[in-house]
Image (cartoon, rainbow, N blue to C red; front, top):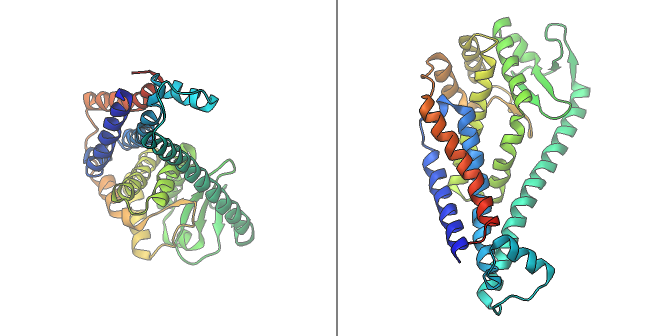
Length: 301
């Protein structure tokens, strides 16, 4: 019972922390660290909520969560008799854990299929251009710039974008999209997108997904401005916003209209870096979140 109570407390703390985290102001000053914290909160919450139910379910074995699940899987009789609450808790815990895994895998499969279809489409309606070597140019009059992540990643721009942007602005946009590819931001977004599909009614999940989307764009901006002028990237974003850019295809990473002004303000008027002590404190919190739920699963209390 102590393990179940501890996991329930952890799940509640993660839920409250996620709700408060959506309004935090420091995240734009350290987007990569903020993304890591969001991931830690998600992992800890998922293991804690399902673990709470399973820890209560295996209480009749009186030997901790993991060992109780092993004995249950082996078909060994518990030390105490089963009753209806423990049976229902076992069913609910396994169902929730399976749902989280299935939803994530299903979202990944759906995304992979969308990218495969889009790559086939690009072979038909895009071409190489010596002006932008290594980039696929889409035959479309509207402005578009996005990347197709994966093992065979591609960066795509449209003819409309080539006409809209100056040479420096185009270089800045391509550096931003290349940053998405190198840092595999698609894998960062996948579990949050999957959770949003599974819990579309949850405001916390919707806000978390939107926040991580913005943080991913900011992280790519930070990497891009190592190779280009931040003002050029900001100007390019404004041009995309005012020109009515083409929506990014499903499963790809590209410009989101709702994030443009926040990114432009950050590029033009950057805030000071997060203090070192704050960074160390947040890193400690991430480590504690990542380790706490697995330890509660393994260590019998």
